[in-house]
Length: 530
Image (cartoon, rainbow, N blue to C red; front, side):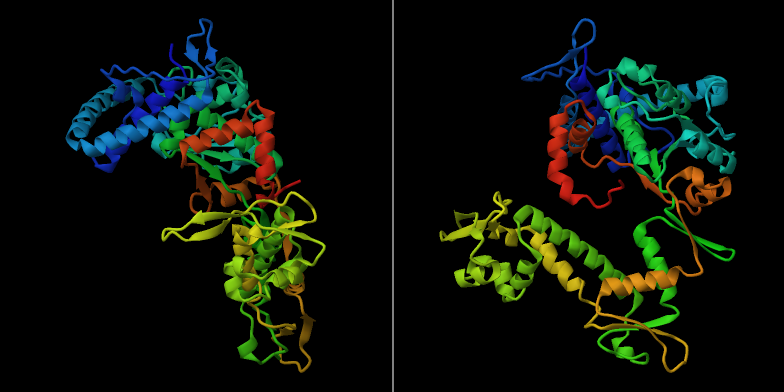
């Protein structure tokens, strides 16, 4: 028996009780955590659901397999229990006390066994595994780095702190568990190796972390498409089969650097394109003066500060993206947007006030102008029009509803921010005292940025990292593994039902929902590595 509805119920029960305990600080000793077995000790529950298309698993077909059920049951039961606990705190505290007693007894028993049988993972995994274990035996102090391939694994093994950092290299792509049955998952060598290293058994109905060997599990993959795919496959596995690891705050993603910038013996690492650009511009503008509005080298009033330039460049890029979206979704062109900006501010906010003559001036007679306004009753009984943004269906048709869309609001915001440098031309002067020290002049902020970037890159050695294997052991430790300098992203589940749906769409067997998802969100893509 059992199935996804039971799993969802158990998960919600455990989460609601542990949340109540944490919220009210009932676990005074804090030397043990509550598990699902503790919350269910002595409990009998009936979970009954109705489903229009149930799918059953197992030889006897008595186990519900619909993946979407788990998230729904989890969400409903969790909300109901939370509400009950809030309304009946005395009963909730009695339940919590009983569960804490069970948890403490179990923890004492576990520690007694652990002291006897705890061995190094090298003993339990055998010689075939590539796990490089750490010497520390306290799981709370231990870290496991999951890395892709032997190349990065070799550098990580050499560079790590052997006292508390363990390395597990994985070969090739990890199995997509969203498309696989449990027995296939358990048969997969890479996943089996990972599970044994972690000390987790996913063959049981409920996963416990009693024997978790590392309290910080860090996914460390390359900064390319393959690395992103492997990271997604690992996240899918952890969400589907070891989500408690995420809820307890044990799962992290390492953020390796994108660039290494060197000058002489000094080096600097940056983790994003924005950080790289900002560093180059900050460096070069220490040696030049940039002014606007025909200012000269000594005109402080028209001096452009580096932070203003960086923010303006970012605004210009965002402006280009939103103009592109407005064109693709609503059919409005750059020239039409420029003419719209000439309208009074109040008409930009309330486009119903724009006259037909003004519309014709903006769009011309060749375009069909439509308005997807819906008449509605306001609170005082008056009829008013509410514009609902809707993509234009015809190439020669403009839907003025775009002026009520979030994209149009973004356009107005970024347009204003993109003009923060002042009036052109923009001039670059060297800071030496020569009479003719003008280096560059342009009317374009982007040309100004390009010139300063090229000027700033002179005398610098810049290396763009795509793979972890491109760094030697010392560099990898310094940038990605050293607790004092590294950047880690903690993996959290914000909305379980939403995450459940996203994984099902993007990683599941059904192609059609995935195609619809990609078509819907294609224009929102920020970073595409092709």
